[in-house]
Image (cartoon, rainbow, N blue to C red):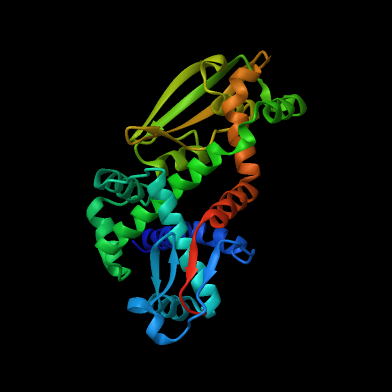
Length: 305
């Protein structure tokens, strides 16, 4: 179980990172001056209504919260304030975009995480307990991770990288990325346990219980551009990465032979190009998006921070 616990610890660290991702993006642009920040000229304690130090579009940030963030993350008072402003803006965007994560979605995510760590549901709960993590707290953090992921996806998909002129420019200057074989003769390996597929990739000559092996000729024009591009990049004699095939199944393809070549049309490649441009310009897109939000926000300082 030790290797499973190690993998779980890595996942938990990733979870904490993802939950903080939007905060970090916002803090990068938080130093910019904003003309709509209102600072009260009264800073005496009698003017701090109910311990509220800052309001972000009406949502309060208390003195207690600022002190807690300072202590927990070793930040200055100003950094802690900007961190919490970023948190409020992120939550408001999630609400504005109507991003909702219900219990079923969280349970599905937990099952997937347990499966990826080769654990049953109960083993996963036991591992959380051994890590000293309360399950309800974990579910809350996981919900926030999924919300953040969905928010980032919304931002990237709505960005102007999908502008057709930009996409055509990318298509015309990266034609080699869109040359695919017409047919690929493969051996498909399917299993519910990705570890078994890893062992098969390491030694294809062995036959393992729990791994189904099928010969398959694939017409690349029937695939979505991302998968077609994957087969284009693979050489004969190579395995594809292990892919999630849905329904609890995982798959890897061994490329035996590639036949013919054809160039994907621009229309076929559009979704792939939009995704590629969004990933390439992710940091710039997120910075610009959140800078616009912060500039539009009404941020009231009820006391000096």
